Length: 294
Length: 300
Image (cartoon, rainbow over all chains, first blue to last red; front, top):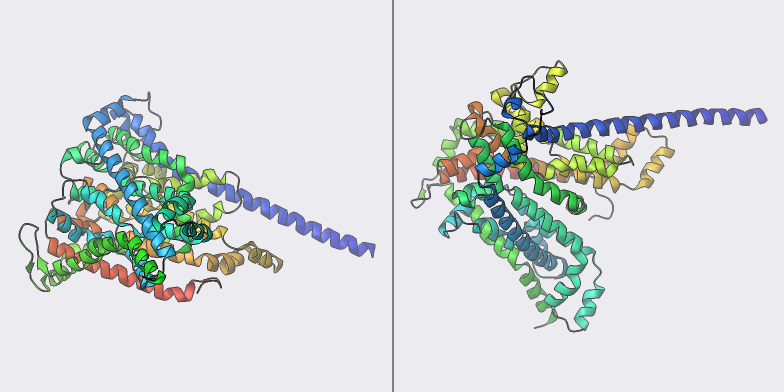
């Protein structure tokens, strides 16, 4: 009897050890892989930054060196003054901010309409809305250009900003998902109190979805800020260029001065990096909401 | 007016911005481009109807076939590779590790950066002589390709670069993994299932809807690939299409035809072919999804 118990105790002890060992091993492997992947993902950033500080001679050393002899801050001054980057930045900010306003206003209205009201064709229209996400933007490029050309809007910011006021499928979908989770009681109470629909929407509903609105604001800022194709086809006047156009042009003009190109690239990346670190939570919540419920 | 009608009217009012936008900025242009596809149009004079000529020309146009080849080549390798890497990273992050937020930030970060900046940075990383990638390959005694300088390495260059930007897909996978009910795994552990079996019979079916979503979006993104191609190829000649048009992506070809050469009619025909290809691929993925996408009981 006692021998039997000690035997079972022994084997379970042995399996316990092997389980613990394999667990520890798998943890070590997990961390090794995580650290290894992180290093691979960070090296391009490191390469960008050290290159931005090198002298022209250090850029073209073979084999390449990691550390610049002394860090040349002048690269940034030189890179940013050869082209009017301040002007480009102002243009980019203006376009991005108008896009944020347009998308937040239009998409929240549309999403609320789809989430809370019953009307004939609602299901089909919502399917159509989702289907528009699957139309590659290149398909609409020529006819939209023709439309804006006929309106005399080329070489202005209008083609880059006005469309935001007509909603965007991705953001409408994201906001609708949030509206659907809200309880109806508050809206019904407001209605009984005699508040109009729009007032209820603005004062009762919207404050409850602030995180989703923030996510939409951030995504549309990112979309407008990072956009290259639309500014490329609509803007010809160099004083109207956005940062992305300016950076691409800079690469084309100074195509061998990689230290200056990298310095300009760092500066163009910085605002997105800052926004990302300040609001990472909203990026992740926004993507999670749309990706999962899709 | 009764409440039902009132509600419907209000509903239409709320969605009207999108409805107007859909008609004027999506459906209208879509139909307009179908029409332009049958015309010769350079923006300066009115479109001239030429029947099927654009589509016939397209069949004999080497640039069209080249762009189709480049784009399919890129999509066939980059989409599965990127999905696999994204899923792998999400699985690593889902192991209840310390500093998970830090790792997640590092993996996701490149995905939010401007594509122009990313493309320029990679142009420099991939520099055959002075770039950092070939330096590492040299240290490891591996062959050092000429990347964007040679036609046969141009598309692989873009595929390598695309792995750096898988952050968004990784986040969706991670969210999917975190949504898998823990009791499923507990039951499997009691049954003595191995790690591989747990992954194959529990994890994969449970996240298959996310995989499906990412696959559809990934295919569409691969077929719309433009900015990086334009920015990286422009240093190597051919209106941004790289050496010997080795980087002539489909979207880039549309841009060159429409906006450099002002063949708006032909560009529209090309755009419609792209639309049909993407539509067909999306339908194929949707049809096949019945076989491999698992939806939990609560879905209709």
